[in-house]
Length: 221
Image (cartoon, rainbow, N blue to C red):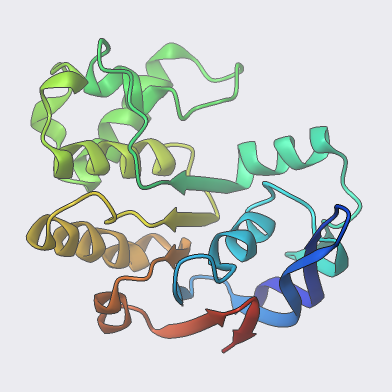
């Protein structure tokens, strides 16, 4: 069953001269599928992932998420969609250095109806999944680059998203640490989360079950 369905979705930047960032493309991604989006810098990879993740709306085409139309959603509607369905991991971990590892992960729980006790429990479980259960009380400022990315993954997982999008998650890491982060991300298949990893790192094709390539705004799957 398709979780994500794009029908002739495209994106243009308006100005004195309009520029096509993403040419109309159709793509289906199944529930629990693990996808790599590859291509050179500036090719349109992040634009494609941003549309799928509800960070921006396409200029043309239709987007369905689990059968629900996304294209006409308001900014508030997209924010609500992201809050409940999508976890994000970026090149920079974006941690609050003065806070503990546990506190950083807990920030991923956006619902105000969840009790503090449940938030802590979920955060501890997410940290255990990424192998950092012994770091719960440690300040984020003291972590290594690889540990920071693991905390970012835990923060994305803590709300149990249906979709996890990682955009250049290894971009600021050395090769060995980057490989460990990729192994962590692609090892989440048991959780049933749909995974999209965006990267120009050629190693990503060794992990993904399916590769989507973007070149000059054109998608081939």
